[in-house]
Image (tube, rainbow, N blue to C red; front, side):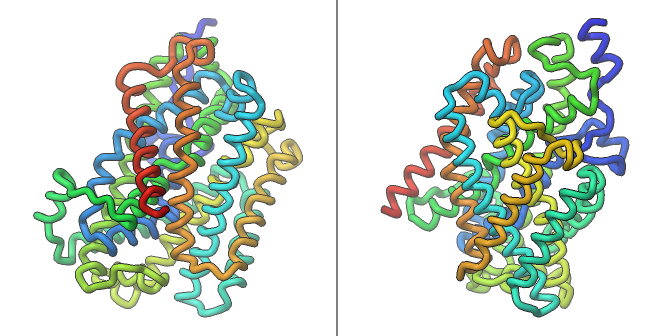
Length: 437
């Protein structure tokens, strides 16, 4: 049976383990890209976009419009690597690149993920304490235990099917935009004709936005989940060996990624606009606490603002923590040739699940340092922005090699946008470091 026939039997529209069985039929082709986009608006993203709106008003709203095609290109390249080679990014590096480069990339990813994971746990704890006052350390321990238990004992598709409904709380930001006074002229001016600045605070915030929007862990996650989806659908063969499956596969990846990243950026833009219209106009330009961040929702939610904010933070945090820990575990497992995958039982992939647990525990321990949880979220995004640059360079070089990617090597507009994203990240990071030095 040839590749084309296999792809006809399995038109890449079956149930994905990363989305689960409860999705509407309209979105039946969506999978890794949808969850990657949802995970992009994690607590770190919410804090970063909130700080951007509070500090600069509508001044950085352009970043969400400008980065959309760039983040779509990068995530499509990530997915294409997994679907074409049958390996995650770390697995491809192990097969085709020197060991030192593989180790270097994995270590960078691990550092960025653990910092982000720890910040997310801390933010979930701080947000919960708004509703149920208790020592933050207690909530950090509780959420770490919940995340570990769910990852070990609950099938990920069911886990996502529950958690994705908690993220609906993020839609409240769209509601606030509809009820508060938004300076639409200023918004559209900054969206399409922005004023740039070389101020250190502006550049640092821009790096944080780029780092939480185009994050290394999302590259590894989407590539690895494409591989895992192939294992769930045995008729799918890696495109290098079955190029006839390419048309449908790449079309699915494009649709999946365009929609997933589009939803992510719309939520991000709504958060920036909301905080610009509620916090910035009242002189709150430096968010220090969860209560200040939650105040942006008060015009819509009133006394329930803290509840909605907490649901959004906890829901996105519980969704993002396994992605952060999972992408690290995929990378290390592929580098070490371990059995990997959330579709496997813990007994079938003991080292993989042990890495998930250890990454979560290390992130938990970070919270026992005297760190402001909101600031930790923001600076974890900055760390991601810095780490993304070398990882993207390696990924772009890999994706363009025909001996690895065959006829699906990245070229044309996709290659152009991928390198444009890499160059933008590099320029902004260098400019930030120059201003801060």
